[in-house]
Figure 1 (tube, rainbow, N blue to C red):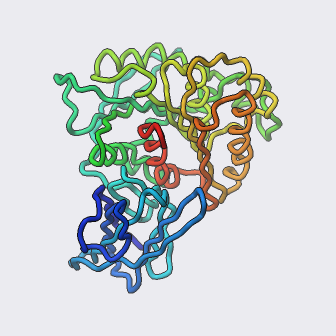
Figure 2 (spheres, helix red, strand yellow):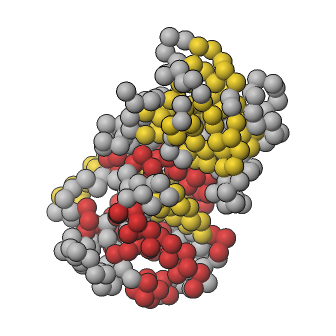
Length: 376
């Protein structure tokens, strides 16, 4: 039987002795519930910047028929990731910042805890000779009659963002992560996901910027229709959202984010339209479809008036992630070669990260932190 932990992180200054760890004034309070009543449970906070670590033993709380509670806290000024060790079994690395409200660790990996089941609507738009669904999630406090505005996160693979049954690895948990951010900050956002579940996915999420690199099979990627997809986002999806929802229209409050082929397409959309998107999230991006010379020629052709923040993440634990890691590591260097501001580029690596939703959702709150904490 696989171990299942329910971890709830709530933003709070540590001002009491309820916790047995993380006594910093910058402590972020953590609640852990363990359904398997582990004999030994520890929490390790660490920094991806300097590898500094702190392992703590939480204080036990209430014990029910279903779980054992634990409490502790960690310093979000010092650490940005964490993992739980229960009877010598480690969880995956989890984003740790003051936007995160919780994590469930179960058969589909680490999942953010939310206050509600994601409630979204689906709109269908004409797309080339067919149609494309767009999933629009609004948080529980969203009121279309209110004048209060929300940021927008446009994401590829909308079919995998919200429902845990979406893939064998679960969903992105996008709604829960954004809801948690809202509960722990003044930031407000909606999520707009574009369905990419058709057999044409590889083509529509591949921008045609040059010759495809030497791959085993180029047929799915050559002459990619990523520009048509980008135009669809800009000319159809964005105008619809801005007309029908209370949202900001400036780049500081709009972002694009995706993984794998969706990662390269979101990077392309953001670079093509910096006047609209102030933050780009490219997780396990398929930059390796093109060599560095092609990328440099493309990037040099852009005339930037503003520079979007760029978050790039990659794992290294399966063959596809190892292949993609080469391009993910090279892209910050390529950007710097065209004098892209270094402080606008963030690259994060997880050696044990694999190419699936379990790992992308685990670091998604890092992307949210970059988008909304402009000075971080």
